[in-house]
Image 1 (cartoon, helix red, strand yellow):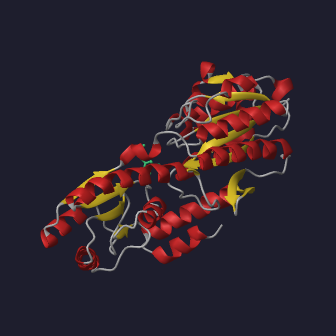
Image 2 (cartoon, rainbow, N blue to C red):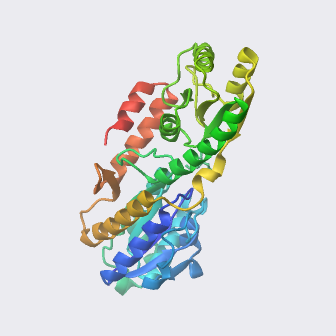
Amino acid sequence: GKGLAVFTSGGDSQGMNAAVRAVVRMGVYLGCKVYFIHEGYQGMVDGGPHIEEAQWSSVSSIIHKGGTVIGSARCMDFKERAGRLKACKNLVDCGISNLVCIGGDGSLTGANLFREEWSSLLDELLQKGEIDKEKHGKNQKLHIVGLVGSIDNDFCGTDMTIGTDSALHRIIEAIDAISSTAYSHRRTFILEVMGRHCGYLAVVTALASEATMVFIPEKPDRVDWADRLCEKLIQERNAGQRLSIIIVAEGAVDMEGKPITAEMVKEIVVTNLQQDTRVTVLGHVQRGGNPSAFDRILGSRMGAEAVMALMEADENTDACVISLVGNQAVRLPLMECVKRTKAVAQAMAEKRWDEAVEMRGKS
Ligand code: F6P
């Protein structure tokens, strides 16, 4: 059977284990030799015990666990050709020519570069006599499929990334807890949520928690945001509301592109309205804990589809990413999606926010 390996790279997210499990189970079912690569690209470079054959039973009882049981890391070595050469040798030694990479856009870009370099890496290893000419002299290809694991939902091409739904559950749970104490003391709470340069988590939680206002990276509020916020807070209190919730995405910016932080918002509320105000930064709680049912199913569907895509790949197949489009798990060209994701980041950096939002919205 074909040699296939799965690894997780970059920041973890809930549901990655479901994806790892599905890759192993589908791979074994289809007669592949399946490997785990522990600790992401670092494990691929270091080899040895980091590349371990997986059995059907190796992935029992992991579907409900948060994080990634095979470990993840950010790897500097893989950014250098020398590191990728080592990784190539380690994969060849195990007979692995199919990879499922579960990570964000950076990790997937690295996988694609590796794939493009593959034949020249093989040539170098052959010349150095480090790999077997008989077995590897043929024009072998490395096939890769990407799955996006990230709580940020910041990847173009997929409706949802693995982990976003669980992070939303966690945030809502935290807001509900905060709301009860806020209600008792008639307080205003400002919550900072994650998402890097994407406001998805912030917008959805603001809608679901009837927040007074939300600050996000993509759509800076008008220049008079501070006045509008105070007006709205006064209105709410006059209408008898006992508490107010304000959501600030960690990457929120103003019209000039300068950060809007939870502390800044608090300062405005306290100075202008003298409201009893607290800040809560949710942090990594959002990325921890058990995956939701949605993320378990999403990870499972994407993992299974990834193996199918690898099994059907031939000489001319380009790298793909498994995406969720209208509740279907589909294969999209990896680099097109990565390019669009980078174009969104670029548009935001250049303050072309409307364009960024439009680009991200397209599937
Ligand atoms: O990309 C996921 C994410 O949790 C972002 O929301 C956040 O900005 C970042 O990772 C935090 O990174 P780290 O775990 O390295 O602190």
